[in-house]
Image (cartoon, rainbow, N blue to C red; front, side, top):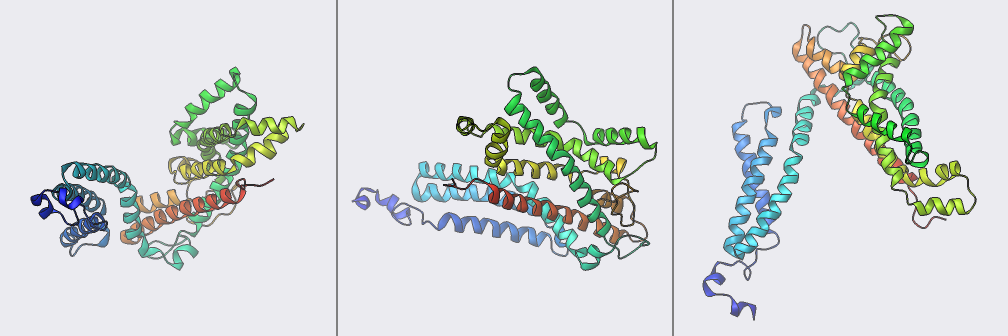
Length: 363
């Protein structure tokens, strides 16, 4: 019946009774990316792989696909369906384009950093290295130690502050003041946190002091407001019915928080902590002021300068020595290691959140 109601000239233009096959949009999308990859590949002949502009290729491929799907769908399915497919492609492409900076950064870092991603890079320091060779073992150790110390400082303070704001301080002036100052701290420049930590330690140890623990304190100043705000929102999402049921059984408030509220919101709290760590693990300015830099390995947070990956990348780029190519390669590899560490932390956070999240049907 449908075929008899379609105009002959329209029917002649249709592919399958006036509708595009299900595979047609995907095939057209793949064709768009293939065309742009070919064009940019031809333009990039003889250049390093890192010079391939993947962001521009994806952007132009998305535009080409939107135009092509609109034209093809309008011819085969009619203008109304063509507009619908165009808007669908527009929304999807907007999401893809929003990811372009991330894709571009990852592509550039991987392409430039993979050359020095070797065993030597992870097992050697820069002690007595002036040209080729060397590694970032000391910077990786410093980054992990300082970030761990900052997390140990920040998480208890931030979590207890959020518990006070949600469970004890509702409507109180002190809670409103804390919320205001936490919001202010969220936007302070990282260099201010470094100056604060440096000034605090100078009071006790004198000028010119540099230690890993100073960097941890500076990073904790940046982490605490993130932990507070994220934990506060997660605690507010816990239904009041759970608290009231616990109180009805005679459980005191502090035990209700420990046994009911925190386990229910642990997944979101863990995610917030990981966001706070990702926020500070790449900071350079406060660590230059506090932890300083060194070419040797230092395991002691309380004695001497300690190198971190962000400072290592900065130092390699700014002080290229007798072999600029090697220094730049070490810098790119350091950036790649930072990205991998953040990715691994997020995977660990997801695993922890999944393990500790309340199980359905648990009594």
